[in-house]
Amino acid sequence: MTASEDAAETSARGRTWRDIDLRAVAPFAALALLLIVGALVNPNFIGLNNLANVATRSAFIAIIAVGATFVISSGDLDLSVGSMVAFVASIMILFMNSGAIADPSLMLAAAVALTIIIGAGCGLANGLITTVGKIEPFIATLGTMGIYRGLTTWLSQGGAITLREPELQALYRPAYFGSILGVPVPIVVILAVTIVAAFVLYRTRYGRHVVAVGSNSDVARYSGIPVNRVRTIAFVIQGVCVAIAVLLYVPRLGSTSATTGILWELQAITAVVVGGTALKGGAGRVWGTICGAFILELVGNIMLLSNFISEYLIGAIQGAIIIIAMLVQRSLVRKS
Image (cartoon, rainbow, N blue to C red; front, side, top):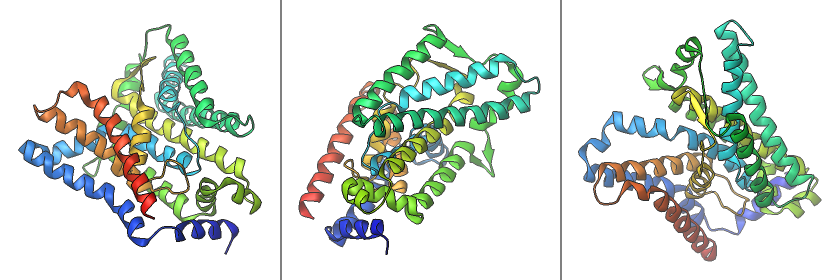
């Protein structure tokens, strides 16, 4: 058994099996309860079309939250993801509007590759500032949040950046509005990203290192784990997930501005915490994160379909959800 595995097992021994099961099952129980409540509020809520639309709309936050699961599991935090979405989307649209490649298919392929590279680069910058610069991740990503948002404002000159090429719009549109075997493309992407992320986190040495670093970075370092490298890669994974979300976002609206992605970092962190991942690090639940993202979207959908609570309070409800989730986590830790 490696040192990282031993550290992870030692951390797990401090919890009872009941608490561990409860944390894993709770998000899915809450999701089932929401489905029941939604069906009682409006019979149309439980319809397949409505639930598919809810899942499709949750794609952006769900995919970003998968990356956030790695960052938070390693003991860090990234507040720049919303601003990063706006910046990366701006670069992508400007590149497609440049006409640098005449063939629309090649242009789209190059734009996709550029988006992934820019997203990974932004994540790498966040990681290096945090690890090499030895700055607290809260402060580091708060700073890059302002940088990415400011660069987006500069690129757009305070307005919107819109995809102008009709051929590219027609070619790219199915990436969000299309379907594969009757399943909307965004849902397929969510499943693909989550399966890969779950494999990396649960079945690879790197995933075990992430948990060990989040549990106790000093012990992990003494055990020979390259702590800074593990944390930096987690930020890169976050950047790649942001880029994938952008690849779905651009064909939906075909436009971006400095207001794009505002408060998405709050929603992503909420989805991670509601999904059962400890905000202090040391434990990550990728499938729970996806469940948390669906819960957030379902809450908003129920509010829209009912007349009990104003839809303008969605942000307040989401803020309350993360506070409640943290209180539940704390109570479980005290019992363990």
